[in-house]
Length: 255
Ligand SMILES: [Zn+2]
Image 1 (tube, helix red, strand yellow):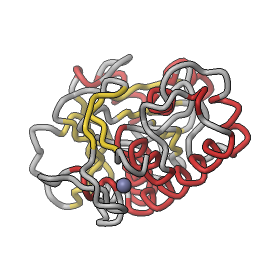
Image 2 (cartoon, protein in one colour):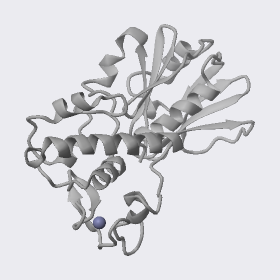
Image 3 (tube, rainbow, N blue to C red):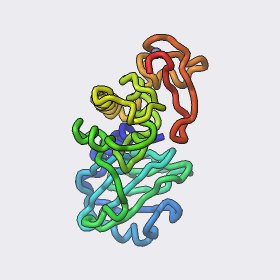
């Protein structure tokens, strides 16, 4: 599922393939467009030139003059440059045509979607979104968690608290910081929150470079898909359970 690191990879793809180029046309399935029609999207995009894209949390924001296209990748979305390949994949829900090839928004399960907004009014699409998890400073992180009830995992998953984290990045950050995903925020000392911030930042930076959360042998993500998942640090059998509605792995000994 695309989280901040994946969308950062899509941002780089868009920057390399679409920024500074004129769009010849856009074809789109009506069912993936959330606030527009394929005709309106085509009219808005045709002959316009994309500027540098931005990422905010899991959103990709692609301004082109007065109009901005916004993409969210849901559970299965991705952005693919197919160059000279003309065959359309059944899950390609939107295709942006350029003189040197097509950029395709592929999304099997059709969660997420594509929005069109006036460039000066994109907040109407984004809604109440916290600051980007990679841009956030430590003091702001501490401030946003302060006085919150509930578990640390559910707070980190909440896009209104901070934007961009998902199940993998949250579990990975908590494991590196040796904090239990079930811990209530109240129970954590300021030094725990500081350590969590530093580890989260490192996890996000390392992952964003690769465009995904890498399944390294020294990371929790490398262990969670194994048949007998064990902690890469202490070799204890990992716990698995549902926290904040998502399948969560953690080490009962380190965390
Ligand atoms: Zn452990």
